[in-house]
Image (cartoon, rainbow, N blue to C red; front, side, top):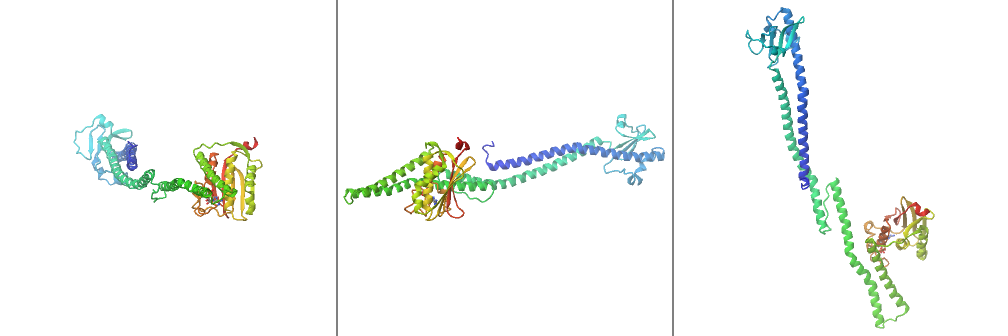
Length: 462
Ligand code: ADP
């Protein structure tokens, strides 16, 4: 039943049920306390009153030497003030003498021959003078019934009041819960509709967020997810166009040159052949890059894990770029915080990552700038940083920089820019090793690309 119920009636139902249960518990507790505490109170109160009246009658008996003139007792102001005995509205006082004859009754006129049975006398309050029972006093002889009805009446009116209050509370609870659940649930309905629309492929769907509570945060999270899915879908859609675009330039160069050779416009001299060769290399590099990425994304990249000294890797990558570093008069620093830091990695792949990162750093760092290559142990990882003093990354590019073919708009038209695959390859290689890659802009100038690789101390000592 609950499974198929919508949230709105479910919350209202829970609310109203809680109020009903609360009212029922209060009614039960009130009834129990009425029965126990109130009954006890009534009995005690009755006893105290009986004792007070008994005192008054005893004094009269002693003073008058018998029960004569007992009816006048209610005329005497003394019993009202001094002793506390008092006739309350509806009270009935009855007195029987030592023989059991009724000699006083405040409700029914006394007749001479009204005798009380022994059992009836046993239920009365004995009046004793000098240890001898001279009479029996009754306060509201119909008491057992009367007392009970008083309790019952009290208990009934309490139950009635609680029931009345309960009905009002249930009504109020229903109205309030309808109002609040509508407030709670309507953003969820909107979110639900948004998710369905998004699942249908409308990646532009966003939901309106009008609160800062958990549901509002859920809406924000959905919008954030929708932003990145939309962006990566766009990148995916553009992938084919990007591949075509990347291939077009080298292919048209090849075609132009080959046609010119065929037409005899140019001679097949070593320079022409070398430029044709360069274009072929560009194409095969692109195809290799794409293959690596798709293999890594499919989890099919074969890693040839070998123990590798980080310092050696750094030296090798430095040698690769030595000439460029020299030409651009770059200040190059190397910080490895531990000697013989050994990692179990696929050397070629990590070397490729370092080449991509250092290549970018060199591309974007102006002449005379600074590049720092560092490695440090952080828990179960070694973090390698490539920091440069270039322009840094635009904040709008930051979330997408590791996507395939993503190039900053600023850099896009530039000829010396790469294919936009360098960082995507780096990410897929690092993730295949079980690590992470990320970038941060430096507080001063430039950016720092970092990646982590799993590390255990035993790797270095083995
Ligand atoms: P490419 O091969 O075109 O450089 P990448 O994937 O390596 O592609 O880089 C993507 C984009 O990231 C570049 O177009 C550039 O805008 C930006 N980028 C990468 N490295 C740096 C860096 N060190 N400093 C500034 N921008 C960078």
